Length: 347
Image (cartoon, rainbow, N blue to C red; front, side):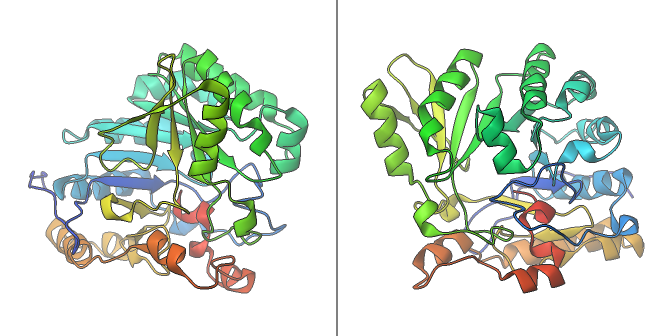
């Protein structure tokens, strides 16, 4: 492909710029978390369909030409993709890239943290829903809690900026750990983000009764710590940030009760090159096909521009307004199309 050229970000129908790309590098995962992969068996993407690292880097260059400045590596579990640091180096060589981040469950992070940091990875977020090993086993069906903690420590030792920890809060499952998890993050000088349990693809056991709302999370924290102060200026970031009286901070991602669709500048590229304009979108746009047919940069740019410019998606808001709200997608439909799964399209 030819050399890239910088232009102003394109905007959708609602004026939202194409700003951030979530890049799933694999649909595989080494955990089976109950809010994401609660079933026993799954259909996986064919290996030959997965984009090669060079193909990913070329596509990201086109996205940065269209305005993307931040990329987050996701999965599945991204560290299951071999030699991930090679992709990070390719992305870091992009002159328009401002931020390369990764969300991981941390299990393989201890062995990879230093290599990823040296390759140019800028930030790490670790998903951790409990401090109790026995509860971790019940939630994930894997006895690997210790390895997550080792991964967190390795990321800190590798010199990454203060980590973010993500906790999906579920009523009657782990909501009794809201305060202990907050204390744990404060001790590490990490920022904890509480995430409302979302009814996205793959959450086949989702129930509104299990959602612990932003308001309730804040109420519990204030009851223990005193008043919290909202921190403005987060822009299009999904988390609302708050400060405790001692100055430590935390965030809440309230996708269920207080969707942030109006500011959402994120899209998602699956490991096999399907581009989704919304986490709730039923269908994606095939970018692998044009890449492997030898389409020019201009042709792929036109495809991306046309679809984003016509984007009207406000999926989380539409779900909140739904009269009847259960799991988003039935298990039969998920088995027929693995792209509907959360672990395929990235969170």
